[in-house]
Length: 124
Image (tube, rainbow, N blue to C red; front, side, top):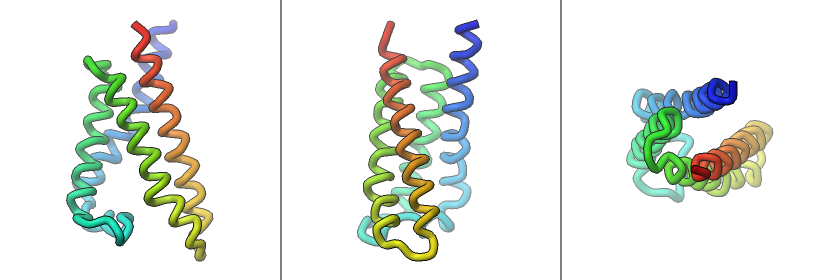
């Protein structure tokens, strides 16, 4: 039973990252608006993020060697999103501030879960 739950948990956690990563490649021009103006090379960041997200899906779901390191780096990326994108969005307010708060909380939770998974995959 534990094995099935672990597999299901890895699938439910990792699969959205693969989909988000694919979206980065398919909708790069639309996603440029999400990159803060103070960061250079907007398209490069979109493609880099997409590649990282797809890689995280593959490594975490299939438990490939060093999946714990990949999960840790995914957590770092999620925390970076919180700090670089969502906190400034919340602080600037505006009519979409509530969406910025939701995204901040979502990415903080995903980052925390990534750190948890990194720790769980390290215990061998």
